[in-house]
Image (cartoon, rainbow, N blue to C red; front, side):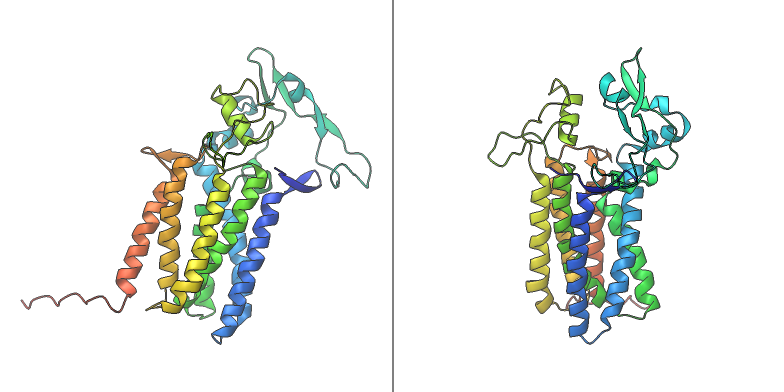
Length: 333
């Protein structure tokens, strides 16, 4: 587990984003080669990829803030930090940390040592740690972690519709490209989740179980469930759902590119295959996850959105498949 690669202005560059950017580069390169092969301008795909990356981060962050169970924490960080409880003991809460006003690479600060401030404010009566200051922009700090895939997918899709129409690029052909490029990038991104320790699974005693280090999201969740005496303990082994989803995504990418794309009967079929297969795989995988994700009616947010995606995939297939029989004409009055 390696959540950060380096720090600048005391802002860590998450390993998750390193893997996400790697996946983006591979997916964009693959999409550009595809565009050149069909006689289209590959620069359109590069511009599309950059715009979708930005909107994907925005959409992913917004869905996380709204639906992952932390909405009121972000509200209280701006209005009343004493209503926010941090999982630190007294010593950790009072520990001095960099204020974030200097440039640093790891533990090296070339412009001089940073100003050190207490991490939080210790509430001796309730024995909890509160944030030391108001932060009305905590909800926007995506680099501190917290992105929801489906939010990113929705945000990127809206941007793609706008740009493809503006550039007069065949929409459903581009959607087919996304059908193998998006799961390829997602396969890399989920390995970034593994490095960050997020998106972990339920406990298991099987041979695939992974134990995460102290203070990891898995340790924190098990401590809250009273399965560990402290967050400073190594977690119990859990299902590596990050690896499972990475494998599922890469498998979908290979299937859509190597099998469906060469046999498609209509433009958009590759996208339909990706949308339906990923939604089903993610729906089932959610039962093995144990991190906080929010939900309704006993289903997680991703499962609810996945059901909608399956419905959309079926609707697109019924509408665009030329081999399906046409509806009979209405009888004359």
